[in-house]
Length: 136
Image (cartoon, rainbow, N blue to C red; front, side, top):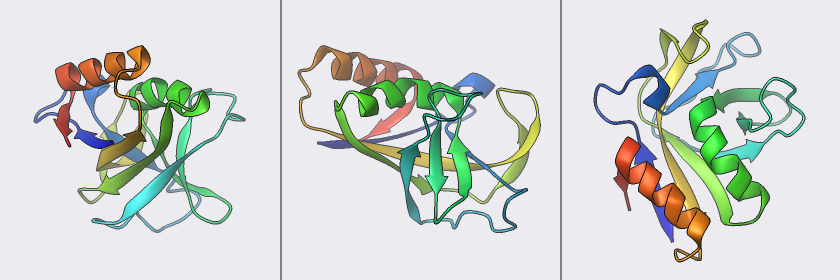
């Protein structure tokens, strides 16, 4: 089963669903409408739950920490099969959860799982329903 979620309208800073671009590595922003696979980077010292949009060698963007904290453990233990994101809007300068200016794209995240009855998946789905705008 696959579900999608994005931020609610007028979401607070901690509840946004964004891909923060690595503008120092590449001048290219992510393309609106394109779907990117989210990959784990366990080697990131600053964010152990890091989810990256990576093409070739360098990361193009990372998903904000609140979302990565929810999804990463389930990807690691095999409860989620994969995660991807679709870019909804062009990048805008914003101050995210770290209060540092960065270019951020609004995205829709999709997660795929098989066992909806699993307690961890149920907890995730309840949280997504309460805090984010969910689609199936």
